[in-house]
Image 1 (cartoon, rainbow, N blue to C red):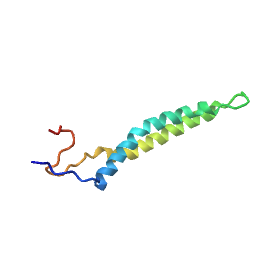
Image 2: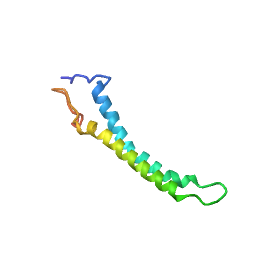
Image 3: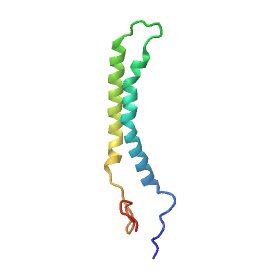
Length: 94
């Protein structure tokens, strides 16, 4: 007996939850890039740069990353809901 085929397109809620998880996975990568960014701001003439602006950039980036993580957290706390009788995708097909 054949299993019923899963729909080609995802529902709106699971799709948004997956994109939310993708955004949460991308947040540390973006954070590392933003923390390293002041290193690329060296002056072209080889002069000295102000470290105070780098420190301000670091703490502003850190605060923004915390706020973004706090904004993403409530959506990540909800478990994925599967329809009754539908496999969760973790089981092997056989």
